[in-house]
Image (cartoon, rainbow, N blue to C red; front, side, top):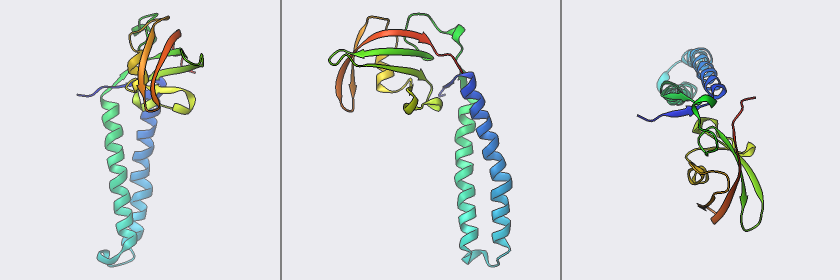
Length: 160
């Protein structure tokens, strides 16, 4: 059984998204289907077909969200070791070749936001960083080629 990792804020966001999708299916899509039914023959009713397809797509999305919710594990600071890169940590790394520093937060798949430096613990970079400490140099194969990074800082992810 697959586990899905979330911060408390990410878990709450998932719960709200499930509620929102459920409401949309029960209210909006149900109304679309009812309106389309009123237009007569369902065999040649494109509006009805479209609404039923939309319903099926949202039901599938809801199923995936509910699976994540049912198999969720919340990450708490108290569960995480200090000084080691793990899920729930903010890591500052320096590329050894260029000296360029980057900062990443390693969280679960459901909270990934690459534009804000939040990467999945399953990403190649995060997997390479896992269980390492400040000063360790890691080598990671990325789509742009293999790079070496030195771990500069490790901190706990603090939810805002």
